Image 1 (spheres, rainbow, N blue to C red):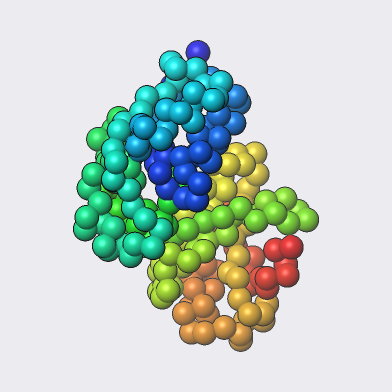
Image 2 (cartoon, helix red, strand yellow):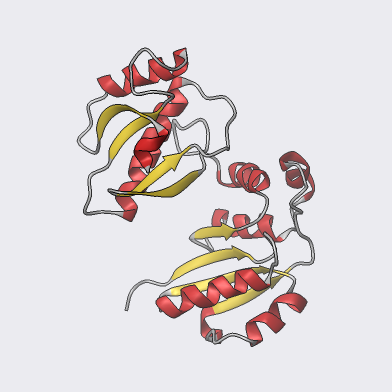
Length: 222
């Protein structure tokens, strides 16, 4: 039997929670038999939703809290007052090794700040990044950063290339990722100085894990 994976779920984050969150758990639960869900949130709202679903009781527990982080909260306000919220407790369970991963559809800024406070950063990585899967004619692309950082240095962008390539390899272990910089044009003279410097760093970097093939424009992702 495969090893059981513990997923901490912030059931109170996002629109129409906890209903939509429980809907997602039900869909996921139908596809796997090795995941245990630690569901953080208001059990008075969660229990009636779970009662409507065909989710085996042996595969979840509810960790009760009435406190939540609102969508309109700033990241730092949420972090300052959020230690008993469903998001904070879910992230903290990963820190305490009682969960393997945390999932939240809630306030993105708060999620990044609270995760960074509790889980720290990977060694030599200075900034977190948001990633997304974008479909293209050739398959799927992992694109980052999608909004976590307003300003980035060339080192940050180089770090993002490593994290993105690693994520792609985890999702698609049979494929070797290609790495490119998204720019206003494919010519080397285009872009600001940070983009140009990053281009040189990636061009000089020799890696057995991925191939760098220069600049791409937005329409090349389609």
